[in-house]
Image (cartoon, rainbow, N blue to C red):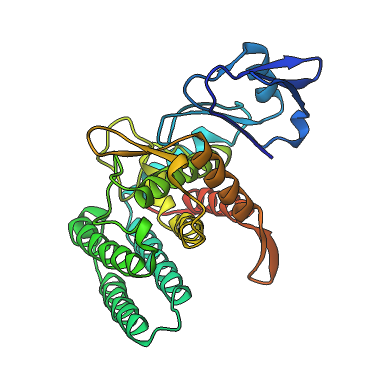
Length: 327
């Protein structure tokens, strides 16, 4: 279970051997053994006793900004053999292995985007033909990425960045074709979003950032040592690399919510500058839908695993890849 505190005035403290959430409607006691993480938004508070209990139980605690992205976190010092893995992680970043690794991440990202577009095809011959055109474009970019060559990341970074951006533009143009008119958007907008679809997408990515960063930290990996994203000072740039493989999970949830017309006017607000922000109701609907999707158990390589567990396994395997890497 994940505890999300994003209502102003909410307070998390400790009572005996458990957590207590105090809010305007009363108190709620929560068993710490059932918690995996605690997300704290602006206006909510946590006591030092509750923080220490979370550390004891190895519960991830992170603080998020208005867009749902983590800006700080508390974690147990028992998470991973960080110093050993970090040394190998640095070696990996400047190796030829890193080139193949990031290419594989981007190829998988486009694979996921293609699968997403196939799932959107409807009983409309003209619309399906348009979507097929976009799918073919994505396959072209995927093929170009497969044939990129370089000894280190800097050799391929500018080209890879351009092709990845172009494929993303085609992908979202295709998605926009099938959205109800209420949710259609002019362009992909971030920081801030300028429409409800992008507001949902940005907040969902923010939640996923927190999950990815937590999985990396628990595996003993330094999220600030990136492979492809290496130029952003004081940012967990490895999270930006890894999340590319999993973004489609958020895309799927957001598209389904919009197709079901689940997010209405009371779920968001529009500011004077035209930016659109999710309000409490919209956040609750999106977070619950995303968490349900992440907890869903599916068949992966012959094994029944939740998407949350897939993320944990990916981080553990990445730590092993770093340890076994050769510079």
